[in-house]
Image 1 (cartoon, rainbow, N blue to C red):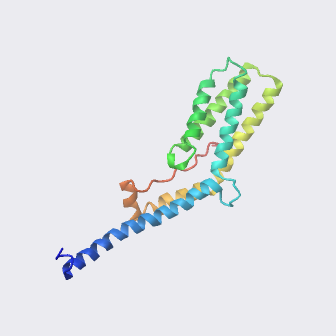
Image 2: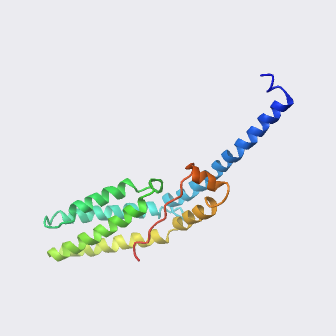
Image 3: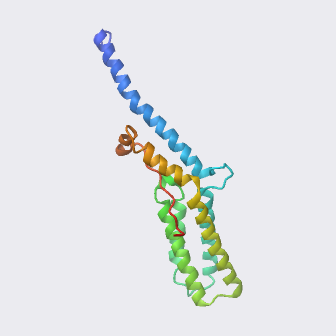
Length: 187
């Protein structure tokens, strides 16, 4: 206790506070910047709700509607694959899950396969119109997602914030995760 009351003890405590405040301050700053990018994911760039999150939910909803149509045709092979793809996309519809781009791309690919199988099976005229609508909805939402400001902001955050000292140390220690980028499924 005598050491802490001495001049040397005070300098040691001061040095310890300074050494700890730098990484904690950096962590707080990096997390604040990350939260801003996540806000873009949820709310979109214009704050109008047109966001990656809403487009992803639109794609999941369209896939669920496709599943409803596919169940009318039991000879369709991809029903269980579509159910799994929808469940994976729903479970990863958040950038912190890390797998949302892969889950979304997989769901889009499975939807395309099921649509092709249904067309080959010879669906009713009404269901054929649904299939064209599903394709347009899936493609439109994917296009909006690929052009959304979130991907640019997430890429900038990953490269410019997490790629520089001292934030790179926080990333390497696992204190801050990179943000997943939206995959362009229309290429």
